[in-house]
Length: 348
Ligand SMILES: Cc1ncc(COP(=O)(O)O)c(C=O)c1O
Image 1 (cartoon, rainbow, N blue to C red):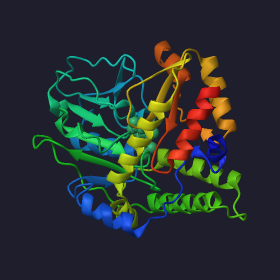
Image 2 (cartoon, helix red, strand yellow):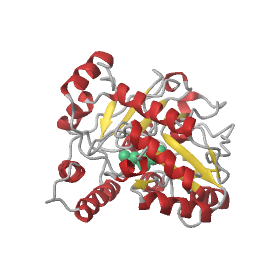
Image 3 (cartoon, rainbow, N blue to C red):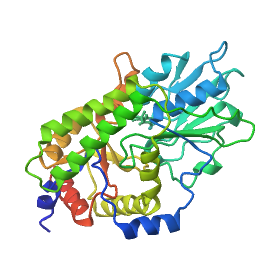
């Protein structure tokens, strides 16, 4: 198949380059999903800012109430919201997703959709539940899930230099405050866009671009979201978002994933988790995960680390985080590249 060679052309995974849109895809997208994201949603600079906006609108912790977060979660988000809101952590991870059956009336519970899978049902009042759908914001089950608010990052599934969303899905939830523009947020988004454009040029073979440089810039851009207050998405990025063929891209991601699963040999060293975000493998040990990761990276395939657990985390969560490999299957990749990933996974 010559596949592993195709895989090493460019790379699989890692930061999105700035998108080069095909006008016919854009027209098709407008035809298929003229209303996504719906105009009633709040569009912000990041997913963590979206959660903060919900917390501010709800008033949790001011003066009463705490936000319950799952123990296995993106630690950047936990750190960010903890600055303004008291939190409590409940034991929950992708292989043992138990949810509290009761929480005090002033509290809110965040439920995360791990890798796009539908979380288990809960018995709380929906007005106490915030659902994080970052890994598959267009998943069809979301509208029926009992949650007062839905939030997420847009940058994990779409090539945008900033972006998050929040909306209250029930009329009983307080409405969300209007986010405001901020100069600092504008600067971060613009620097991110420049770095994404440089990455796109590098992928296209431009010899004047330096991988170390754009990689460092994209990493700094990623880190900058930690210090930004919630702000509105820039108008140019809303326009970009609305021009992306989000539904067709989701279909490509799912069909690449289906192809990968279908052609994967039985793996003695890992099991798969339910997912629509990409292929999620839980290896039998950290050593195996590290070895497989090393082999994939040497061929230009960069599995995501979702998510490294900070010191002091529960042992089952740290153990799981050390054994998980997430392989992207999104719209950036051709069938040939995905076939190349199959070949690589056969020989590890
Ligand atoms: C599940 C989940 N929710 C929220 C976020 C926060 O998104 P952002 O980085 O846009 O703040 C992330 C980021 O990785 C995430 O993985």
